[in-house]
Amino acid sequence: MSKYKQVYINIKNKIDTGVLKSNQELPTENELMKKFGFSKDTIRRALSKLELDGYIQKNQGKNSIVLEHGRIKNNYLTEIKTSSELNKNNFYNIKTKQISFDTIQGQLELMNIFKVDATVDFYKICRSREIDGEKMEYETSYFDRRIVPYLNKEIVEESIYKYLETELKLKITHSRREISFRYATEEEKENMDLGEYNMVVVVTSFSYLSSGKLFQYGTICYRPDKFTFVTIAKR
Image (cartoon, rainbow, N blue to C red; front, side, top):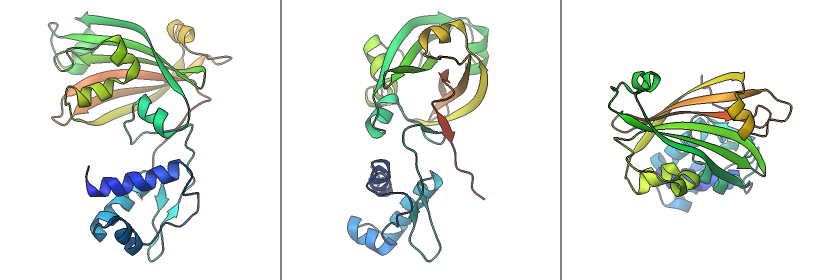
């Protein structure tokens, strides 16, 4: 792990766990250099990423300040996080259940999205996600089987991305996301605890490798009262 990421993760974890609280000042750059034994450029790079991700506010000539940071309901659109990573870092219990697992081929929509012909097949995986006892998410994902040739129920219910990165050694770099709102389908109503809600928030994702190759396309539907989507706008 790079040096600046070590600093970033150390401070981020302290904010996430409440060790560093909202409006609290961080140590000075010199103090952080002494603590970690890294250069000023490394410390500044870590602080810049913390600011970009909405954890701190840097102030010219003053110490950086920890920003208010709701850790339970916030989904940061600038991060790609697996459910197991969120489970570890956000203090609530997440359980993933496989609903269906199929291999499909020849669907025009997928052929257009992935820019392939009818000979290419895909895994279609549907999962529900239970958070603190409530089914709040329903996910449908498509994986290009030329890149992801094997998956099983254990991987699907644990962490697909962990398997792709550790076992297949794939370098996942970025995801393009689109947010929309629509009425829930019967399938979503069946597999989510929507209560009185008849609409869902839909995040559509296109996920890429370091080569620029699209390997996954899919949607996650959220119950609208349970999630806040956050991004940071800079001027």
